[in-house]
Image (tube, rainbow, N blue to C red):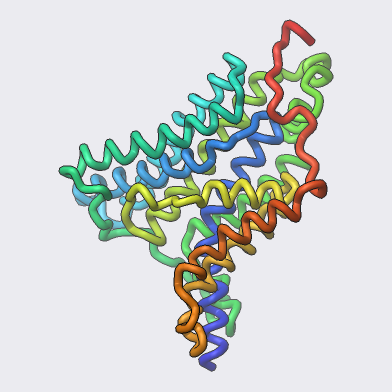
Length: 320
């Protein structure tokens, strides 16, 4: 029974760590399928994590209790949309280099959120620890099934939402006219413009969706894993999400599989100490595992993943 419990908990922890990556990777897909490179996923997750931590703290302080983490999620959503507009305006309207714009978002998020946290919390480098984070929702009956009950059906609401999002995103991208238009402006914007598709509008929508979802990903880390926000809350998760997106070939189902793979690599570190021989291996090597795997996966994906044809190319309607 012990090993069954351990496997169930490992699956559960894998999904918890995967949730933020799923949100962010799906967000990246919407942006890059529209033709806009979004290196700023890391920064957008940071903004979301910050907004969730601050809003949830003040909601708790106002006596909102169990509703406070959901207010944090809403705040993260709004913050992600606002932050993504910076990238959208720079790269779509002003046709700035999309990679540089994304890097600026990352630096802006890292610096501004740390400054605001110190300003709001009397010089502390992190928000006050939340009393009311998100709690797990066990699914009646299904949560009692051995292994998969504990692993899959006893999770945070954000994890269930992330899994549903994967299916919805796949349906929207490949089964709806909106998805067809979004993919068209990322593959051949001039042809899409010729048939009446508003290329710039679709790209704005793609980037805004990217910001909203990436911010939700950052918020889930604050509200489920750390219960606080600091400068290292995200610590590279955005870049891992980008790797999941690329390894998943810009497909929601593929990105989900890659995110779960990376989530497992993080979760396994939590259980590594259960093995007697693990004491001979420095913990730092275990913490490095997700990032090492990210590099390996990206190298393996070279030449095998085909990005949208117009990805990274600004579009000028007057020069079609």
